Length: 551
Image (cartoon, rainbow, N blue to C red; front, top):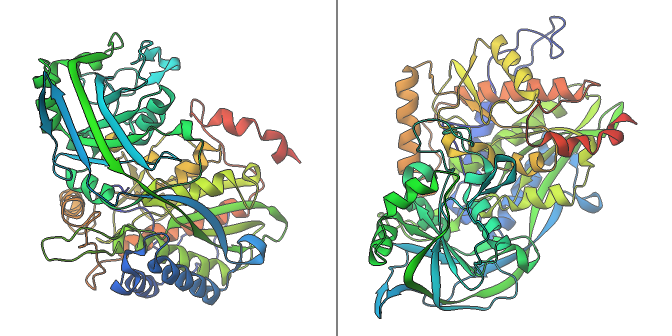
């Protein structure tokens, strides 16, 4: 799930040596013709949208391995090979999906796709048959003891269907509250809602979709949830039986049928005094079959061993997967090519690997990982973070590339989720040498820091950076940048129209890739370790492994 304009790229000849201490011969930087060629190949119809566990995966993995080899990388995967197995459970819905609510004997069916989407990722479930389950509104579904916030207040949700709002309680309040105003926390992410409601024992969950709080339109939800869902192996207790989304319009009508005012309850949910609200005598019925299967997908991993500290790792990552084949668009196109998202990031990853392989080796090792399953919930990176091939305690940094800037050079960069680690300060210093400044994140309410693969490593304590070009385009300024971002989100994001284009301006991608190259080389040649900043939620996790880095 992506961000503003871009997320990884490289540009401008560096003015100082990578240590920042002395001038040196500047590297030529990223070759954007190669990046464009790799993007074009990965996003072609031959790769069928690169869905995990499809023939498209086989082609994508083989292509990336071949390009890693040609770049000069060494195999970094399991058993001396190029890949890491990522076991996944696949959940398809082969038959009709029936969703309705009833009040006083009056049944209202919900149109699947237009008003509601459903799935199940609960291990062991072959058929969801929730009949006449009480509906309960649980506000934003947040349980945050450190903020003295509990939307549940001891309610028993077993056997019930919870209705929950997306984003944080103070997203739409006039003044910032306990969750930092419009900047989304992890409590605001839809993934957290399902996780917490599973802990609360709910049988089913309906997240109310609203475009501004979700940061994308209903079309994105529909395209993402009308294809098979995937998950890595988990304890069944970690998943509810039925996961779904409902449109705001349908939710308002559902609340009205129970004699409730949706907007009034939403305002109540924005306060810590909120208590769960039963939808007075209203029940939900959800019925669909689940076709479960087990598949194995793959992370593709290349490596360049370090010269003096090979046990230490600097990690670059980008996800190779996209949505595969799905519902046809207005043109009848069913292939979700994912040229920007994220063939562009993988193309940039390959080019970074080539640059490092053709430069003097670094003190620390560098790993280049093309992740699977990002579109399914960060699954490939999550699997690596819990089954690391190189110890996370000695992984100095994780840097993410998810959608390159395809609109031209910028005067600025954006640090997504700023204020978390010292990597941001290093990135800002390199950007300054490029003549760029750090601008505030344009849409912190979108929760970008929690929406891509670097987050798997942040959760495990590894300092993780997600940066992108800012909106201030050299050609057209911030207004042109805003329009370009809106055009992409509206017309291409998670749609078959996200296809390779010959007219892309990759100058901004080159700026970003050159910055990331310089940053990675700086970290890989250092003896110091990047740190979480005071107050960052992941700092205490990292502290637990301090002893492993002291040796």
